[in-house]
Image (cartoon, rainbow, N blue to C red):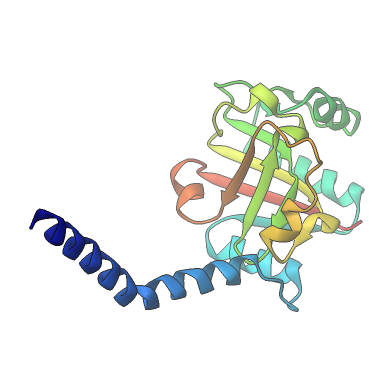
Length: 194
């Protein structure tokens, strides 16, 4: 008799899961939307998504405009002790007149590069490939990302396809919205035309 009751329990579970099928399909469809490509201009979609969620977006036509805008922002906000997440980025910024140190857990303002940008979700993908390695132990309250227009994509699928055969140690997606407002208090993205 107990075998029949166990069988009945299993049948009830199967039946209820079939009733929930509509919910599962809608979740699957939403997943497809996130990973699907779109014909909209990815730069515009991303700028709208990031701005809507409180991020600051700077479009720069060239490298000179990037560094002019970056230095103006740093000067206006009176930021000191700015960190960068790799020695290469630190050297590059120093060569352009932006003084940084290697970021650590106490860094309040930091600058990083990214692997790619997903316009649809307003997400920025950072991996250990950008040189952050062990330096990125936690996000600072103020985060600045520098990216090129060639790094902006319509879907996660396109960004993930760029990862090398040997996967990075870690991949982080900074998504605008709640994550930015809770962990990163101020978020700036400088997108440079290339």
